Length: 96
Image (cartoon, rainbow, N blue to C red; front, top):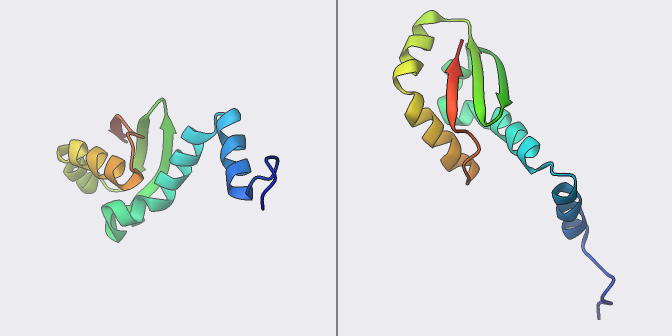
């Protein structure tokens, strides 16, 4: 029988993340780790840097051809990212 003061480690961790407002940062890390699954290996291999700031994903690419192709599919990529994450993590995408 559980005492009212007993909590699972999972619940304690969730409370900690919530109290320090780390949810957005954890979502950003999950997004960066899931990038290859979202866009595929070829695009991920040409991605040199990724950062998220204010719900905008900044992506640096080493190929102008891939950058141009992705420019035309930005809204689909944002949609795929948010579907993969299960919530609206990204509002827009900037390709460099």
